[in-house]
Image 1 (cartoon, rainbow, N blue to C red):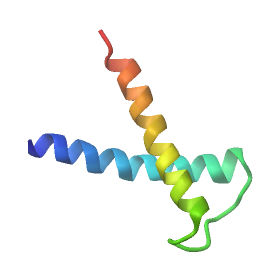
Image 2: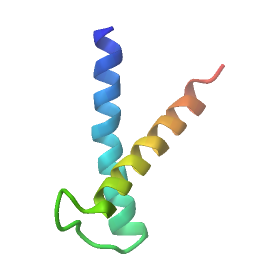
Image 3: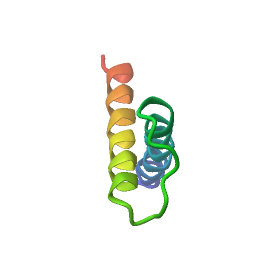
Length: 61
């Protein structure tokens, strides 16, 4: 159970970095100004979903 929780929290953290990189380098939105910005939340959630999608495609048998 603890490994599952670690994977869940790690995917959120790495997904937030991926979402931030997509927002900065691909979409050209620049830096996110604050934590409570809707754009920052959408980028973090989108990056996490993308990461989990890629992981599921790589581990699919």
